[in-house]
Length: 338
Ligand code: PLP
Ligand code: COI
Image (cartoon, rainbow, N blue to C red; front, side):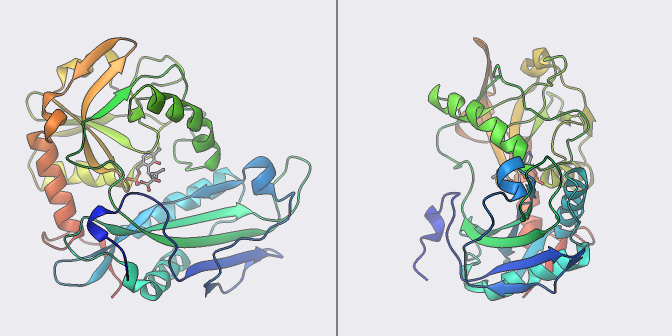
């Protein structure tokens, strides 16, 4: 395999197999692995006209002892079920989701990056309405698919510090839909992302749409802060994605590092009181933030400028230690595949 694992970015690399199951006449077929990366659907497919689709993201890792594992895939399956329900799509059962993940990773095993490379095999489960509709109503046929792509970090560590800005755009996540990882929300964030990049920022720090006073999340990751007395705090909101990485980090903070960890509303005016800020997610892992700019008002996190802060580093080391098998995992967190 001719892949420079150490210098991989976060982009699509075609692998040998992908998993497909089709829903028709009210039931899912038995599913299969295929080498064909193309999806052929009708021009009026519900996904193309009305964005009836959602996705998940998880990774397969090679551990210190050479095993191949996934991190908490049951939570991805469960979150996808909630997303599908919200979009009136048939749910793909959790056991079948896990079985599909196992089959797919085994078939693409040579694409799981070596231990220590900092890369992983990203898995992208997704589902969409595939048959033609013209009126606004759910499709009757669907495809559930998973493809795999080896990836490096979403934000390169050690490169320039991550900077965020508070945009004039809303996250476009209706109240109560924070559990939906629906394509619609991401498409609505594209303009804000392009605009942030054009102005030299890595990402947007979105505020709650209702009052524009509370910190929510960024385009592809949740946010954590560390107080001056080493408490880990993260925004409480029902319009952000309930990140599996964040849930795991809060657990790690409490049970592995003996720190206080709290989910609460965080006002944008108070972020200057925190000593560390970082972005967390499957893709982002845990990436330190150096600066946040809110309409000319700068907040600096000096520890995030050239290296992660002390607590961010400890959280990162413990989480990745659990994922790569260097540190014993809580029961049920690691699915061994090979
Ligand atoms: N927030 C958004 C908008 C995301 O797209 C993601 C990534 O899936 C996350 C947060 C992090 O979630 P997780 O830790 O489950 O990957
Ligand atoms: C993930 O972390 O899996 C994500 O979905 C983030 C992103 C690439 C949108």
